[in-house]
Length: 186
Image 1 (tube, helix red, strand yellow):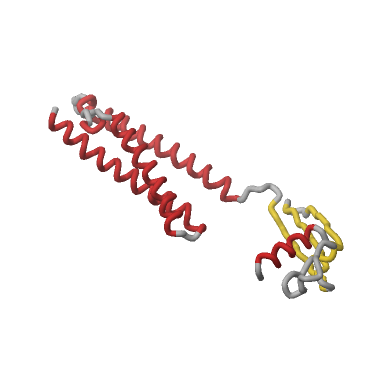
Image 2: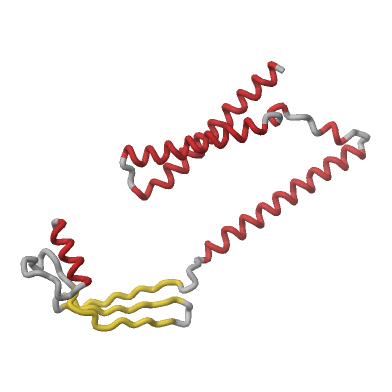
């Protein structure tokens, strides 16, 4: 179908009498009339829309069922499971640190010796800045790849996310090397 035939078809869908005589039924098949539109609410909580249309003398029935709440079970379970897992992880880390400290005290050791100053934690602003720069470079490169190479739209999110994570990781590796060299010089 050419562009003009598509435009005629769209106009014919909106204005039923606007279809010119130059368009043949092979080029465009306008909807003559909508016979009945009915909305039913079922007991399962789903909305069902039944649409009967008559197209060029042929009757068509379309049934569309949608979840009325708009949420799927995974939309509730996944965040809830994440919160439970994060809470349990923090709880177990806290309990294990407390047990280690108590065991060190029982043996007459000082628990404060366990906390050694990490040399790479001195430069927090440098780490945060490099991480932001790396992430933004990854986002820009992901969008650039999508635009330059005409990637399938289904893969846009994957490419942008992957490139952002790659450059963020690369920036943290660069931070580690820079922090190590700065520690040697001090």
